[in-house]
Image (tube, rainbow, N blue to C red; front, side, top):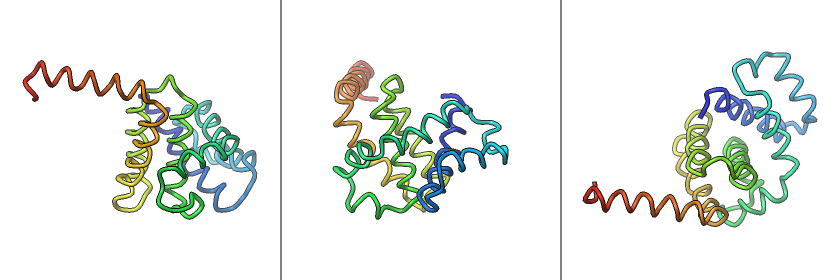
Length: 155
């Protein structure tokens, strides 16, 4: 995964957090990020996709997440909520991106921005979402891992 795309996700978390907390328009927040050079090392097209894609698909994303969270999505810590929404967006809309990559990136975002241990919470929820929404891909990946373990004697 490219560092520019990882940086786009990092900026996406910050921008979604700002949107969630202030209710400012997406256009205004995006303008601020551009003016402040916060997208300098990011893949701008991917930032735009996730930053506009999450709010555009918010109902579907929050409904998908609500099946696996222990409280209403609105009550999840705003940083974790932004990370979960990006991860869910990618799992639901970016089928070209392996689910393991989505989970790994979300875990790293939680380690970077979230509270201690939040990466475990984020991983647990997104892993369940992947198991449900990407069943075929998960089964293939699991079968490949089990086959390689069998061939190496379980190592």
